[in-house]
Every structure is written in C-alpha cells, then in structure tokens.
Image 1 (cartoon, one colour):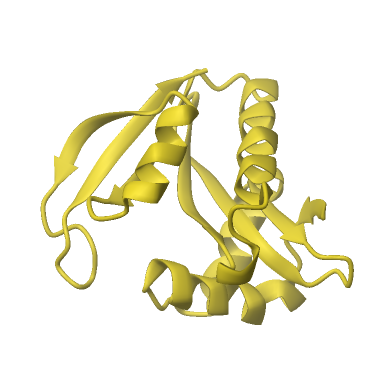
Image 2 (tube, rainbow, N blue to C red):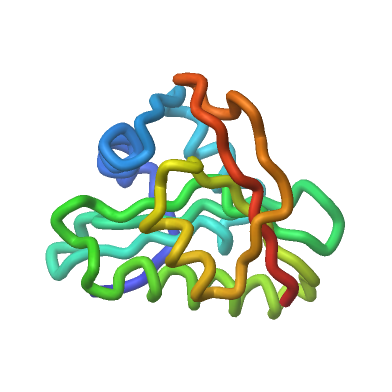
Length: 145
C-alpha cells in the first residue's frame, strides 16, 4: 500500500468509493477543485498497481483548523490498516501546517467509523439533524492537535 496525493485520473475511483461507502454522489469536478485548495490535504491510498483503494479529503475552512470533508476505504480493503495509514498521515500534515484542531462529520448509524474516530481521540461535539442527503442525522466530531 502506498500513500500519495490526488491526481485527476483518480476521480472515477474516488467517486466509486464515495458512492459505495458514503452513499453520496458529487459533481466530478468537485474533487479536482477541492484538491487545488490544499493539495497536501487530499490523500490517496493506492494498491500495488497504483489504483486508489481509499482516500481522505481534508480542507481548511476555519483558521488553524482542518476538516475531514470525505474519508472512505473501498469495501475490499477495509480492516487492513488503510484508514489508519490515511488518518495518521493527515494528522501529521495538519500539525505541520500549525493547525490546532480537526473536525469531521459522521452518520449516527456508522458505529464502525465512530469507533475508529474515537480511537483517534475525536469526540462528538454536536448532533446535526438531517445532515445527509437521505435525511440521516450526523455527528460532528472534533479533536485537538
């Protein structure tokens, strides 16, 4: 498994992971435009053939704070340390930029993700009613760096 930055050629793979894992569909141009804002915040985990199998898209919208906008691993590569590889690298990049905190949103029904984030010292700070496009509630979680 290797870790690298996002490339425009990754878009179909990332979009497929988003659809399967996050149950969302976004305009394809979104990935490239968000990558341009903070290229080091868009991490790709790729297999031996350099095919993306997971990603973490971080953005900076609040001063000295990073937000995990999207984070998912392909179903066939879960529970193999891919998520940890991505999160570890992301938190290091946040610290290197001098960020003091990171936030994220997660579906209230996604117990696996909530456990993962809790292991990384994220805590629930708010309930986001009907946050997702299908009407499901979300939790906003945060951690200090």
